[in-house]
Image 1 (cartoon, rainbow, N blue to C red):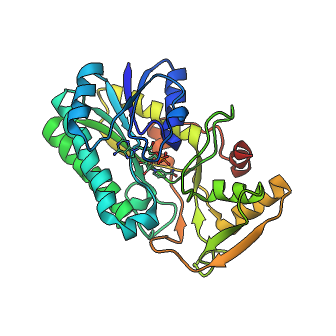
Image 2 (cartoon, rainbow, N blue to C red):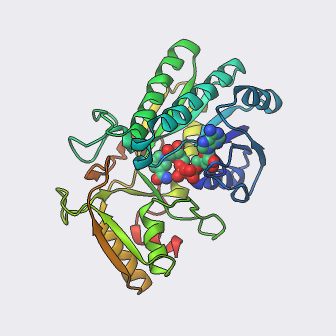
Length: 317
Ligand SMILES: NC(=O)c1ccc[n+]([C@@H]2O[C@H](COP(=O)([O-])OP(=O)(O)OC[C@H]3O[C@@H](n4cnc5c(N)ncnc54)[C@H](O)[C@@H]3O)[C@@H](O)[C@H]2O)c1
């Protein structure tokens, strides 16, 4: 089975390439390297491609005739999306629309989408299940929700079968130490804290200490990156089962840690101290995001390698 891994040079996509290759799938990465790295694509073929370029997409679909597309490519910095929404809607919505149209034109009708907890906005209740109201509070979250809506219409009109995975916070690295999270600028909490612990940055910033949470800092649910990739293979099996209809799944560990708790855990595990600066809130950050993973556990029969935050942090050390 041939899989197009769009955005396979990025953080999660590159872990996906490795896991899918190990599971004997034929993988082809399509990426424009805007935030990804070619040397992170360790297996299969690499094709330079911008999903905004429909001609190039069409050429590659005709060349490889993939059975399924996993779509990781997007811009994903919440703050930037507030400042420059055009950039986000263009890449995340128009780009995805191009990809989906090219798929339909080439009779490729199975799709796995990297959606996000950002579609929910400020939660009404915790843990957040799939039925929770969707009221994204930033253009990034809105762009992901727009694609989820497009997918429903593509299913009715063109018989596209899809799975949308709404990741909470992806975290950790390949345990074999080859793949790393290499965002530039890095905005994700765990790699930033590890950089502070390793002396690669002077301090770590906490944005907001007056949220309605146990210690005033934001609470997030961290899911191990290889668990995410393995769950995508379950998504693929799900789509191959003709009796199953398209579906959305929330993917997290089901427990939350505050920013201060994560910082303390890194200090304890690394035995390193570093400066912590308390800053004001950032635009577009909900106080608490914790997933209910019950639907995914039941319908996809998933298991997790790392549910323990300490084990996830250790992969980064
Ligand atoms: N990292 C997380 O915690 C998290 C959480 C929720 C959702 N997501 C979603 O998961 C996906 C992957 O996230 P990531 O952290 O690996 O991001 P990333 O930036 O590391 O990877 C994205 C990849 O897509 C590529 N790309 C971007 N625009 C493209 C375009 N127009 N054409 C071709 N390639 C393009 C980039 O070069 C990069 O390799 C994204 O869709 C993101 O929104 C991530």
